[in-house]
Image (tube, rainbow, N blue to C red; front, side, top):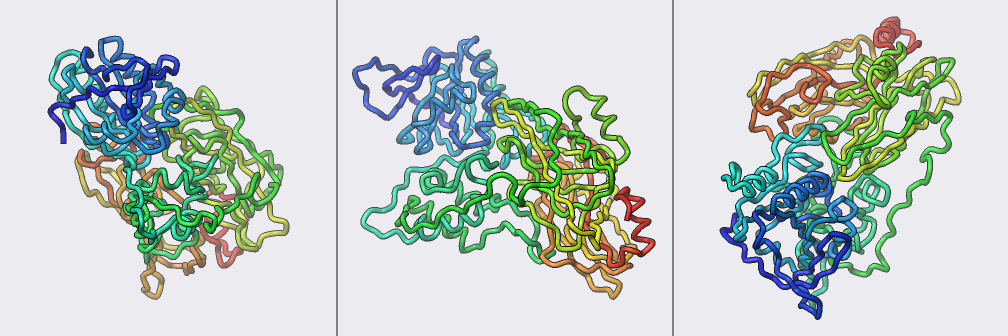
Length: 602
């Protein structure tokens, strides 16, 4: 609720860090000079609550730095507030790290400012006039990180904080005075009740859950924005852990139960979710830490051992501190002089702070090289895929995915003279970064009896502007007896639901996958727990639904426009890939199908 006036005249002890004013508003004034928080005398003050480990707040750092500089030149200012317990010790270093040294930083140690303004998350932004009246509150912009309204991959359409600050500085009315702030919940002060034995503790209940489901990504050097491999680090974000698990945002797993049985399922049980909530509500008690299970150990270097072939990007790629996400395709010659059989692929993201996922495509016709040559810098940009129908695939990597060897006797074909087209999805994190991703390839030690093939399912689409529930479908008959090994659904930003159903020749219906809350940021290869038999003549039907209305928070166009099939961010796709092995490798139809798709000799 917007407050009519925030009386913000608190004494503070001051420390200086470069050009930064660092003030702890909760400590008593010592012998050093005291001051009032200077909204008085400023034409406008932007107040933004931030958190050290919040990726959504950090992503906005370049925008805040530019805003601070612009406001200062016109008689305004930017103030950062750190309210999370435990953030205070790292606040100055964090602000400096993200280029926000020339601002006032407030350490809200007892959450006085949070309570006064009603801040809920980081980032939560407010604009005050010279009298301290709140004129705007809500988000900074719709530049999304994971969990934001607008997904990564689309440029922001609205910059509400900048608009509100500029209007206040120029004495004009603010067009949008309130928006929803989306981000990381500000952790409350809620110590465990004294004199009572905690029923849910980290040592006994929470550490096993985090070790089994979270630590693989949430540890030093991995993609998770905060570590969860110790009590101290987990306690610091206990409320956020509880909330994202309740919403099933984390761990990221999209398939609906009962529509395919998959290995590597990343889901928490209702009992585990309840334990996380009870732990956070009771103040995140430690329990007997000496009895807590140790976090799992992870292999250093190549998980599967030394690869037979190591390929890497031709040069490092520079990732900007802000802006729309980048889907960059790097063309890497394999230099294999004879057809090879691949039994495992292991990608090693060079910088997991900005690498979101990696997909490997094969090109035997030199098409990617021409696209690379036509664009400056290493690689070329292509959003939905490599920009052409690939000759094959070489697996990929996404957060939480571990490399594995294919079952005995099965291999991916790697035709001689192939180029690996490695598409890397980069998302900015608020500061400049660089990446040099590489991949290890493992060849079969004895001839494979089965070759992994890819069956594409494609549905047509032409989505009218404003259509909130556009549906499309298509059906394909399986041309030979085969077994499905995995499935990869794919849509863009407007996609909402996608599913595949098989109708066997005997009429039996077999759901292969169903996703009812599609999120472009969390795509995966879904491996079946057991191979799924698809006899010749099986009807495979792909169904998908899209929301192209203005009400869709993931809408990349303002206003909505007609959307057709294409590679661009603002285009769409309706496609799925089924990885299969044929029952009879010598079936002429199997060879014809493989030749048509460019999958190499059989």
